[in-house]
Image (tube, rainbow, N blue to C red):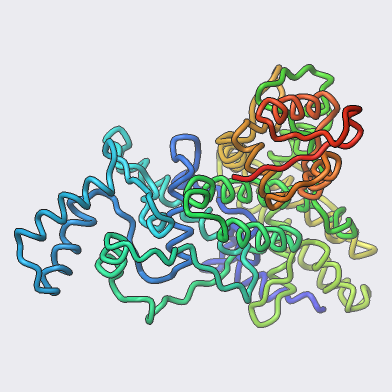
Length: 475
């Protein structure tokens, strides 16, 4: 495929000047360098769940921010249109409020209620400015999750419950009805092995009983958000263009365990696979792949990660593209250095680089070095913070000065149930299922897991010798 310089000019220029566009050619990560968008522990996990369910159902339902504004008026108008007298309406609204809210929080008693969850809690301590940041951050995560669905997938979170409250809320709070859905696009590019497992796992969970869906749906979505972001980061390198399309492995530790400096969760875990210096290069590495998608796309179609980029490049002999590749490197280097000259507070961090190349590998590696070396210093900490904030909600902890990936008891049990689909499996096979998601445990962590499963009476021995052990977790 020929390199189209004009597409680079279109996407990376405004009024004739170069601009640092973020993910204009391909969207890979559910955040950006803008500090006006945030997601951290204060958000909770239910806001993303609510927004994801609203996107999934696509019927125009709005979240229930509070009873007076979000429920009382629409339900009252709906019941008046049904010719119910005002005294009966008042009694019904009082009961509805008691059902919907417990201690001021939305009470989800049915999976159909999940789409009413607000993105930000109705908390007076959260300012309007912070509320907007969290809403924007969670909206991006919900769209990221929606992009994990297969193109032909047609799922709905709503139950078939004919409960009176569910029926009235559904009819009263949907402004334009499901017969007039909006056009929602899957904006983000997701690794294929993640899309495949997400489809299988969400389908499995939606077949469970109501109490299970309500209790664990937010865990599934948060796990997949962190899983997809982590794996995407590991594939943001031209050196991964011929790597197997399978999850990168990470060692985890249980929340109850202690981590020494020699623990595999430290030596072969997060800090090993995604060290600080890798996160510091995240904006530049993403921009390099974004530029490649910009100049290789046809009819606005995204090319993909490096394994797809190399397929597209290889379709055209290198010599036919050599001039355009070198021209692109020359343009980017020149224009980005001009940007730094206009900013008194910033300076290019690398010396002038030769733009002469001998292969596509040379081209992509030089483009990445330029994008990383000439990224704005302010983007370094911002992008790193976005990733750490997301993972630290549930999975990432600092142990002995190192970031390690951690599973708490609730997440462990949920993942076992989801990976095994509630079936009885051999203990060794269970660990292989975890490995299929890039999750590994050392011997110490395995012993801790088995001890915990025995405590919960979830681990069965086939014989007294304990040679064959089976696990069965039903949520």
